[in-house]
Image: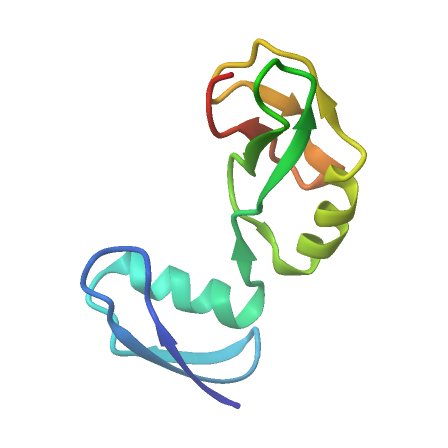
Length: 117
């Protein structure tokens, strides 16, 4: 399989080409830094994304609170996370960066507030 990936780790935006059949047989070309190589390998073998959403809040003047995962999570967990946040309701006050749910859905990272209420 051949895949072209635009690296988003740094501002250079390298166009990386990956050729692979499985995890033990992968060749990546076109990266300018070691972080780009790691990004391409992860994108081919186990893609991850930061999950962003909003949860309901009981705080005065605000109905929703933006939230995100502290670290990227496995791409296949995005839809289960989207369903799970529908059940969360937060009481204020909340500070940006405050943990809303620890180890959110067993992803290994926390769901945190993206703004202060």
